[in-house]
Image (cartoon, rainbow, N blue to C red; front, side):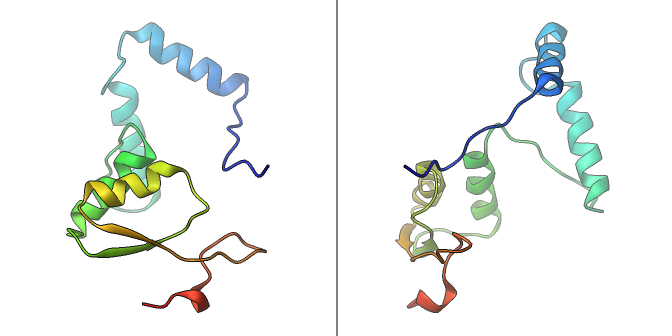
Length: 112
């Protein structure tokens, strides 16, 4: 079995989440705003938007790029939600084989 991902969380992450839960801000709140501001500064841009999941981020990214219908080349070596984001934009996932050493899409195998 090859796990798609295995989260790694230590005491610092547990403490940080505990602080947020104790603050009463479960949704958008001061920590989200702080993250967005620090991330925007880190990547040297004016704005950044925090979302609740990578699926939401992919969906939003495809909306921003005006992906609506058509085909999107993707990897079969991913979590299913990666492809849900493509489907949410009325597009069709087209799977491309991966490189065995990097597990990234093998550009030489793209036929589009």
